[in-house]
Each structure stands twice: as C-alpha cells, then as structure tokens.
Image 1 (cartoon, rainbow, N blue to C red):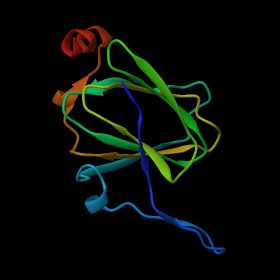
Image 2 (cartoon, rainbow, N blue to C red):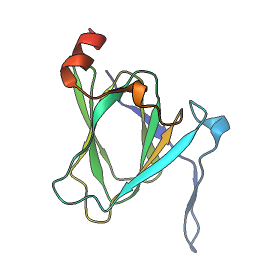
Image 3 (cartoon, rainbow, N blue to C red):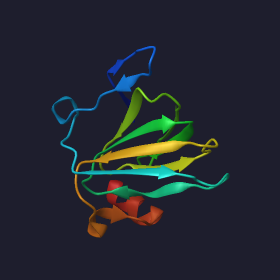
Image 4 (cartoon, rainbow, N blue to C red):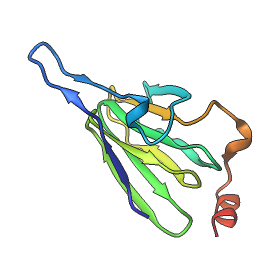
Length: 130
C-alpha cells in the first residue's frame, strides 16, 4: 500500500495565498465536503473504512497524522501543508491523530453520507479485505 499524495495548485501572493480545488482536476467528483476542527488534544478521529467512498484529506491549518491500513500493511502520513492532500481509496481503514492546536482537517468525499458504506469494526474490515 502506498500513500497517494495529491498536490493542490496554489497562487502565492503577498496579500495571501490561494489554493484551488476543481472537480475536473480531482480523481473523483466531490459530492460532500466537511471539516474537523477544535479536536481536543489526544483525541482520535476516524477509526473506520468505507466500502465504496473515496476521500481527499487536506490539512487547512496546523497538522495531524493520518494512519492508513489495508488489513496487512500500515502507513502513516504527516499532513501539515494546505497544498498537499492524501487520497484515501475505498476499503482503506483510516485514523486521524496527533492534531496540533488549531488544526483544521478538510475532507472531500465522492458521495453523500451513507451509513451502509461504513465499516466500523476492525475484525469485519480485515475479513472483508482478505
């Protein structure tokens, strides 16, 4: 399993920088956007996988770690640059941890929320991914 980094085009300007995400340049059409913020120190988010959903995780502010597992392999990515995100394929277990103070995590998703797409138990995920 490899971590798939996505570079986000940006325009640097002395008045402030601008990063641009466009559906036509992403690996999937965005149907849902949400973000995590004010995550208390020591808290973890995620802890699940998706059967079909694809996601792009972008650190808008601060930093955090993204742990990706496929059932046999584990990779850890430090996200701390708002012009680089990580593409999470379907059937990949994800956990977010070690949020810095003020961190904001943007998530772009390939579909709307569907509880039936979630796999929330590690043992079930391992059985399905084998």
